[in-house]
Length: 121
Image (cartoon, rainbow, N blue to C red; front, side, top):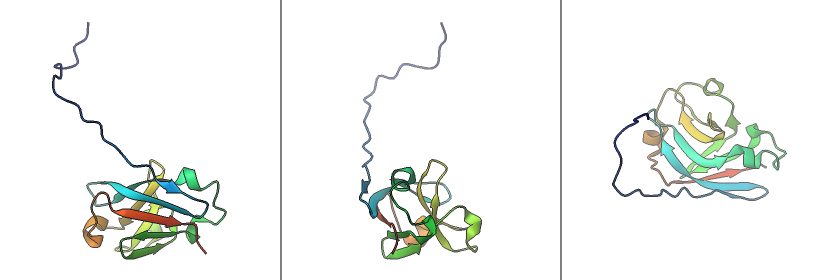
C-alpha cells in the first residue's frame, strides 16, 4: 500500500466556470483567472470559433471594459514592449496581456470581467 497523504474530512466546494456564448460572428465570455504576471485568462476557447470564422485572427476584435484590441496575435513579440495584446494561451484560450507589463493592473480588471471577441468587419 502506498500512502499519499492524510485523508481530507472537510467539505468540497464545486467551482462553476461559465461557458462562453458563441454565435457565427461573436463570442462572449469572462476573465476566469489572472496569472502571476497579470495576464488575463478567459473562458473563450479559440478552437470553438476558428472553424466557423473565415477571417484571419489578425482581423478579430477583442473588447474588454472600455478597451478595444484589434487582432489576436500569435505571440508577445508581435507587439512592442508595453503594448496591450490579445493572443492564444498555451491552453488554447483567449488571453489578454501587456508585453513586459501587467494587464490586470493596467486595465483595472478582475476575475469575472466580461470579454467579447468579434470575428471582424
